[in-house]
Image (cartoon, rainbow, N blue to C red; front, side, top):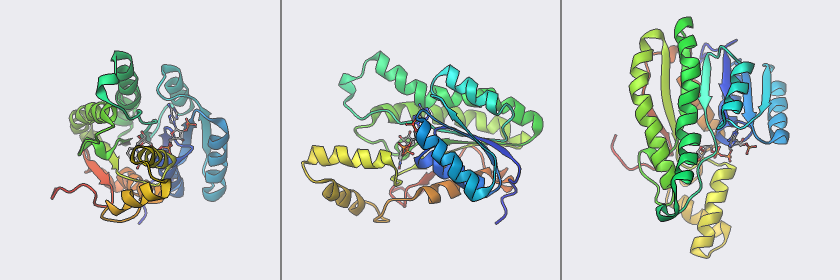
Amino acid sequence: MNLGLKGRKAIVCASSKGLGKGCAAALAGEGVDLVISARGKEALEATAAELRGKYGVTVTPLVCDVTTPEGRAQLLAACPAPDILITNAGGPPPGDFHDWNREIWIKALDANMLTPIELIKATVDGMIGRRFGRIVNITSSAVKAPIDILGLSNGARSGLTGFVAGIARKTVKHNVTINNLLPGTIDTDRIKSNVEAMAKTWKVSFEEAMRRRLAALPAERLGTIEEFGAACAFLCASSSGYITGQNLLIDGGAYPGTF
Ligand code: NAP
């Protein structure tokens, strides 16, 4: 399928590894020029070199923290008129809500709700003016089915989801769509560290904790960043202009609802 994206420009946030990298690679495979970002330089530059080498597109790596105004300004300066925006950042830590004070909550809201909203605000009017825009927010399956120990994520990402539900209906008439991708258990460093935490809680080995985790999934395996990236590229396709305000689970059927 030709997604009609060749020559388009994308900002892909938090993309040296994991889900962000999967999205960046899928877009690069469609001929999209990229600005990618992370806080760590080494992995980011390695990813930029890998994507340039594989796909022959322009990849600009920016070492910055996307959750800060300075980091976002750097991204927007490097790509002032993006056709595609993929928002992403590290997730908040697990824990017990009794321990979370205002400062901890504000940090989670900043990273996983207000950062994507600021980036949408900064890019959406230009997209409307150019009559093309695709915005995809990487959120979490926790938005559909809360995860016990991830209350900060459940809360912050639901706030973003509510905001997007409203704005996505206002932009679609200008061929600017805004959708959310909801990962369940995709094979990334983050998932491995979650399983390590489970192993500690259950007092079992990492392998045993992973076995239990997989046994609870209908797919009986983790998803791959390639599968995740392919869904992202589909939402960005030129032919996807009638899909907006959607929350697409990429969870191998883990969410048990009929709809
Ligand atoms: P990951 O494998 O740990 O990768 C995170 C990527 O984001 C890295 O490139 C990291 O690089 C970058 N990053 C993190 N914080 C950043 C920041 N403040 N500014 C710029 N770059 C930043 O994580 P992942 O599994 O891809 O997860 C991505 C997001 O999806 C997280 O919010 C996570 O909670 C959420 N999620 C993932 C899953 C899953 O199945 N994997 C499920 C539910 C939700 P640096 O550390 O060098 O900055």
